[in-house]
Length: 499
Image 1 (tube, rainbow, N blue to C red):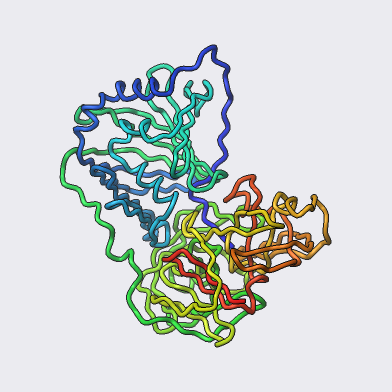
Image 2 (cartoon, rainbow, N blue to C red; image 1 turned 135 degrees about the horizontal axis):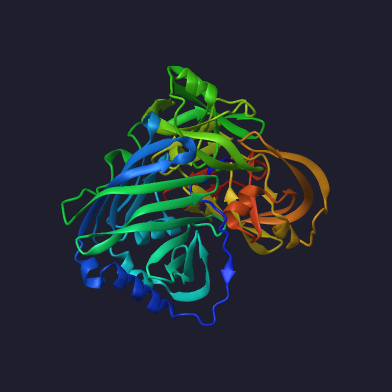
């Protein structure tokens, strides 16, 4: 259970009470006029922007480039020290990222990437919102601005901030696919390129991380390349069949790195593959790298460092370049965590009857298993619905967690109040931290699979509030799955469970 938080912050604004509020459409029109007008914006059919990203707190300066083409084609690359290269893009409506793992984006994350990558966003932003509301006049990072809520019929909502003095859009509050983790963007230093004013300085606030980008050059209506990288697809190779091994309830598997076999945790609750800091040093990986906030069961994890791609081998299959994160995993007692970036390339088949763990590219025989829909969210994690005392509750599938955990709001649906139940030890996440738990008997269903009354743990996990905000939520762990055949069809969006 470990999630990189590349989109997370807590906005803090000081509201001011205006006597009247402008119409939101008028604010968008004023911004468009201030940057050159619709005709000038739409005359830009391609744009290539280059410059430098600064992470001042870590003394990092990283060159970046952004290639954009109509209607919503984009290819972004940032080259960090130590060989770390982060990329993302949209091509023919397909959104992808390498952040650090190579993956495709789905559902709300894909919708947001397409919308935000549009070269003509200034013209069509207002048209795409199902509803717009001017909320207040407030301070946005030192700018007196109008705050406008943008509600979209599909994809995550946003807020736009318009300068009171000159009408320009000076910032955005952007959510990923979680209501709990917005990112704030401040736009400054506008310069005219081919008739259109473009912000040449952008500051982004994330939880524990501030990035500032400065534009050095812009070229317009020149050929650009936004094709999806060929190596984004999983490397070809045979299906992986391994003996099913567990440590406690966790599934562990051998991964060969640096010519030696290492033991990794199979963890659908981790969006990236992580290796221990000691292993990284043994492999000669540089100490430099972008340090990003990450979240585990108990809260933020300090010191997680994104690193360059490394080769690995699982079974008879080679992975020439898997980008990894580095963290001290001494508390976990394993060499690494195999996360959703690699797992989502395959169908995962945990078969206790045959005693095998299979990672395949072909659909296995799932006759007799119960099918439960899942969707990908937050960089490859899996979301499903559980029924708590007959009421649907949003949940995350986390094979890196020993036990299933309900938030207290979810437990309320079963008639439990805070402190009910008995103390039940602690949940140990992949981050090595423990969270104290309560436990009580709760009636549960997973899709069409009726589990009946189960002894379920209860705690307000940071992982749940981070992804699902204040709504009732659950984390589905190994206690409900051990002894069952578990098949995860990432491509088809189905979790299959044995009885």
